Amino acid sequence: MNLAVDHPWVLLALLMALFPLWNNGVSQSDYPSIDILPQDALSTGISVLIKLLAVAAMTSLILALAGLNRGEQYRERIGYGAHIVLLLDRSKSMDYTYAGKAPDGREESKASAAKRLLSEFIKRRQQDRIGVAGYSTSALFMMPLTENKQAVLAAVSATDLSALAYTNISKGLAMGLSYFQQQREQTGSRIILLVSDGAAVIDPDSEANIRRWVKQLNIRLYWIFMRSENSPGLYEKPEDSRDDNAGAMPERYLHLFFSSLGIPYKAYQAENLDAVQQAINDINKLENRPLHYVEKIPKQDLSTQCYLLATVFIALLWGFKLIEARP
Image 1 (spheres, helix red, strand yellow):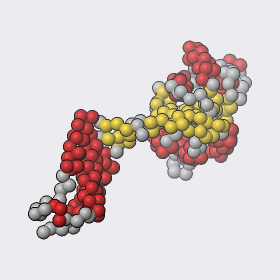
Image 2 (cartoon, helix red, strand yellow):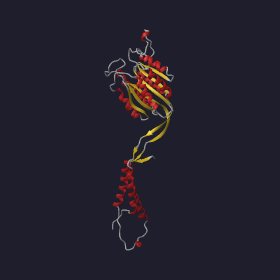
Image 3 (spheres, rainbow, N blue to C red):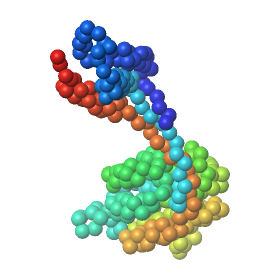
Image 4 (cartoon, rainbow, N blue to C red):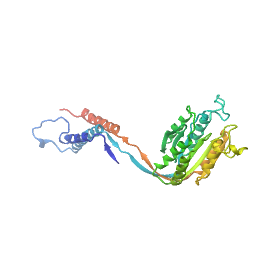
């Protein structure tokens, strides 16, 4: 049961709970000789019951005052799914539509669309452990890997708030990978699902670290690239070879970098919301493998239940007192 108390010293009062065993609490009547009273099994049983109820009432109250609780526990879970980190672009451009304009009510922003579609994805993935991270100027920690879908949905719901201007993909990827560096479970797929509408140059030191970490952690990478109108794609080559560099075409070179990591990787160039939905549906079908993990059950306070039990026992004692026969 893993029971514990917050105030152990209060348990010394449990000795007081034994007092009713020497006094049943009913009125005493004097008789010339006890021998003239016949044996009454029912009265004897009620007397014992009253004593036990009194002991139980006092014990419940003392345990409640001591702060009885069920400590943190771990439960083994087996199912089908994956460990998924949603890595979301929080740069300013995500606040605009695919046409590169501020939302006017007729068309939603890319951030709002991503929030809505990812929320539907999370609801379908009942046995996954999902974490949420973001990045703009710096990395943003939102929600650790958890099986609590309501908490994950709340974290995703906050991603369409006003964003910042810059995109630091290096710090974002490092944040996403850090979720798995702290994870003990090795079963099931480990996935980073990157959702962004652009990219940035990754410095050589960060590239080396990312290459090492993705291999060590056995990562699978998916990138949903929400391509805005007239922006360079992942597969286009510039007409002028002088423009064929990471500074001029960061999305193309980020895709080439991901492709060179030697890990399972797939990119989805989504030029509209239907394409984003198709990409999410595809990922939902691909990642459904046996999953074994340990679920952490938080500490549970039991003092309220103890107070309720004490109330029930005291009510029963009061009932016996009301029906007590008086000479």
